Every structure is written in structure tokens, then in C-alpha cells.
Image 1 (cartoon, rainbow, N blue to C red):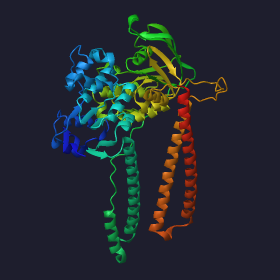
Image 2 (image 1 turned 180 degrees about the vertical axis):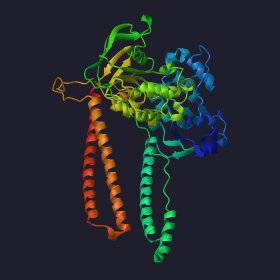
Image 3 (image 1 turned 60 degrees about the vertical axis):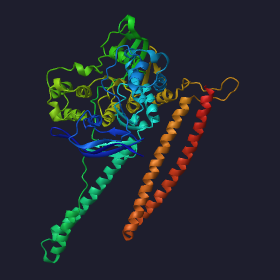
Length: 602
């Protein structure tokens, strides 16, 4: 396996701030690597250095002579009225049939190939640009947050394309599910160093957590040994008969070194102040039509009733009207027909992509948050600011000099500090690393108020959503199943039969066949059971090996308590194994039932 890219002892600083310090890593052909790290750690800077757009202070970047680099330009100038096929042929210098073949993998077929680029929606424009990169047939592909602003349908398509791609891939993303599905290796940028791990992001984070736990256990053991030795020294160092032994103990103490732990694995925790909890209807829409004037109506006759405390994910392809609906419900856009009504005296917060641009031009970030916080304690304000990556120095910055990402994070922090009854959030996870996204997700999951949100991050949606509204072909409907089934339908292009409350036999006494969604949910439940049992067996095995090791190290110090525990472990392990086999059998039966359900429901 040849090396397509080498970073050799690279160093980079911006003034006193060090980004890289003698960082080294190699990328081999065929490796799909997910690049992770906190916001501001230098991921985009690294890609710019590889592309030659940013200079190194020290070290060098070496490409193999056969390396063909592909990347997605952030700001690309495209001639007006150039159609999709013309664009692909121009950027790739390939024949039309070759370009059409690549375009088909992004569902760019038939009339879309002859459509002028500027007439396509933002999601389809991104598909065209990605197809242009892939048509050049690179063997090293660099992608910086390619899923930002993409709908779920396009993200799934991109996953399929990248999984089929045979070249090397270096991918920056804060979408944990996307990284897990696409990348087989993980590269973390942390403390000015690069660490390459031979596994996906889930395996890497589990490994990192295990290393942290082991380091903490080791440090605890060292501290106990130091304390024990120091007690001997303090007692006998001035007694002639034992002074030499005390000196020996001091030398032992000096040799006992703890492992330096830079920081804990997860530092972000959030709490959103709770509003006064009430029951009843939060929002009611009656024959609501929304859009930009009568000649540009996007959604028609929306009828929906949202109860207080529901967390509603609004899903659908880009350009279908999700953001337009949220703008209308936030009083940013007047309805064309019909009406909507929020619950009595409900306080509504709204976050959208344009909102950060509407921040006041005067004052500092800290003053803006203080104004939003109301009666919240100063330490809670500082904690929330830190959660959204604002240091004390950052809070002193004038709002006028904040970057787009900083403005977005400031708006989100102010919303999280306010005691709102309902939150309207349009793509809130952009500009956040996935530790912060997960912390925000946990806080919103526990939030007792009402949430209406648009997001294409699967981890985020599955964590928060209790209800789904699907926006499609100018209509809005309440999706009848959980989010994981929505994603399953999208990936497989299968449609589950509508749920029924009457599982009676069909005409002619044909046995009732359960709908696919019910079987699917049972399968997911059984898979979770298997995973739980496997984790439990691993814990028991680890404990058993620990006791055996203790026996081997000092057999005379082991008492009846350890023997009893070994018997308990043996019994618990046998019980787990029996339950695992039973669960595995049930899963096999469910897989057969799913096959039958698919055939029965066409």
C-alpha cells in the first residue's frame, strides 16, 4: 500500500497561538480518514496547508508523484447559464458520457443534466459540485464539512458515493453518524499533535475513554503508593537505625511518576433554564399556506396541532419549504392563507441562518449574553458561554468583529440562557463540533418546553425528536413512525404500510401479517438487547481475569470473598449467554418475518 501524502514534523502558529507543533502523519492509498477536533483546533488550516493555500512555519508536506488531489472549493465562480453537463465537462475535461455516469450517482439525470446551474436548489448545486470533483478521478480527496446545508437525502447519496470511492479520503465533519458510516480510520487534532487511529470515530472515542480511565486508575495507585512511602519517611527519617531505609523510600517516591492527563474526554455540559411547565396545545395551524406572495406559495393547507412539550423535527428535502414554514411560525413571514396560533402567553425564541446577521452592531458579546440571561447567576452565564466556546477574553470582543461562526454560537447561547416556552431552531448544529452538538442535544432532549427544529444531523434528530412533520410536494403531514424508520425508508426506498389498529384476519382467513414498521422496531429492540448482553459479558470477563491475575500475583492474600465472587461471575456469565442465544434466535425469526412482511405488503 503506497503512501499518497506525508506530513513531516509540520509546525504552524498564528502569533502566540500554536496550531501544530512537529505533527507527523501519513495517508496511504484507499484509507478513508475522518479528521476530528474541537472548533478552532486547526482542521481547516491543515487542509489549506495541504492545498498550498497556507504556509508552514516548519516541516514539509510530501505528495507521491502519482497523487491526484481532489477538493471542493469553498467559493467557485460558475459562468451564468452554464448547464450541469457543461459544468462537469469543463471542470473534469472528460467526455459527456463519462460525466453523465458520475452525475447519475448523485441522482443528476435526464432534464437535470441540461438545467442551468444557477436554477438548481442549493442542495442540488452541491451535488453538481461534488460530482465535478469525483469526475476528475482523484486518488486523494479532501472534504471540509461537505454535509453542511445538505438535506438528508443528499447526505445519504454522498455516503454511498464515498463508500464506493476507492481512493484515499481526508474528511472533516462534525456529523458523527456520517463519519461513522464513511470513514474507517480517525485522525484527531489535539494539543498541536495529530493522532491516527485504525478504527472509526466510535471505536476511537471508546478507546480514548478507556485510556483515560486507565490513566486515572494508574495515577490513583501511584498516589496511594506515594502516601504509603511518605508515611514511612516521615516517621523514621530522623532515626539513625532506619534513616538509610527512609532515604531509599524518598528515592522511590521520586521515581513514582503519574501520567499527565491534559483534560477529560468530555468537558461540555449544558443546562437550558426551564420555563413554567403547562399542559395543552402549544401551536395550532388551520389551512395554513406559506410562501412569498400568492404567486409563490410553497406549502398549502397545513393543518397541525402541536402539544406543549413535543419536540418536533421538520424533515424533507432542501427547497421543499421547511425554513419558510419556520419563518412564518416565528412571525418573520406573513401567512398567505389560513392561520396559526401559539398557546396563551408563550414566549418564543427563533434561531435561523440569517439571525446572527441581525445582532446589534454595538456592545460586546458578554453584554449581549447578560441582557439575554435576565436573572441567571453570573457563573451560569460564564458556563453557558464556555459551552459555546467563548472564553472570558472572547466575551470582551465587540460584536462587530465576530466571525460568522462566532455570531451563530452567540445567538444559540443567548437562546439557551432565556426562559422560553418554545424554541424554533433552523439548522442549529452548523458551526459546532460534535462534542458541543451532543451536549446541546442532551440539553434539548431534557428541555420540557416545545421545540420545532430543522436538522439533517441524524444523531441530533434521533436524540431530540418525539414527533416528525414531513414536508413534501407542497404538503405537510405528521409522519406516523419513529425517526429511525424514516431514515430506513429513505435509504432502502421502501415504504412501510400505514399503521393499523385492527390486526384482524384478512378476507378468506389469511393469517395477519404485521406491517414492516412493527417488525423493524422489534428488530432494533432485539439488536439493542444483544449489544447490551455482549457489553455485560465483556465486563464480567474483565472482572474474572482481574481476580485471576490477583491470585497469580499474591495467592496468599486472596480470601473467600474473591472465591464467592468468581462463582457469582460464572453464574451471571452463563445467564447472559443463555439470554444472548435466546435473543439471537428471536432476531433470526424477526428477520424472516420482515421478509414475509415485505412480500405481503409489496
